Length: 79
Image 1 (cartoon, rainbow, N blue to C red):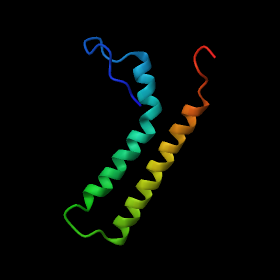
Image 2: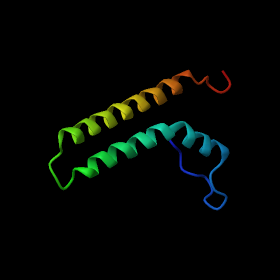
Image 3: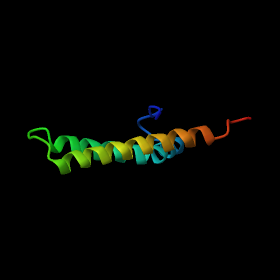
Image 4: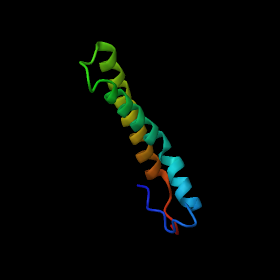
């Protein structure tokens, strides 16, 4: 979704920053899921660990759904 930055010397454009802001809930949900999965890499997951992972997966799916729905609501440029 996020395009590469055009000129690395000048940094991200306003459009790049807007795209990051729109995707931030997905980024944070992915981080939370990764944290939950990392916590059980070296041990057997407890019931609480499994619940934490399930909740993180649900939050990630909801964030992706919301982002996709917002993308459908954006009017086309020039339309």
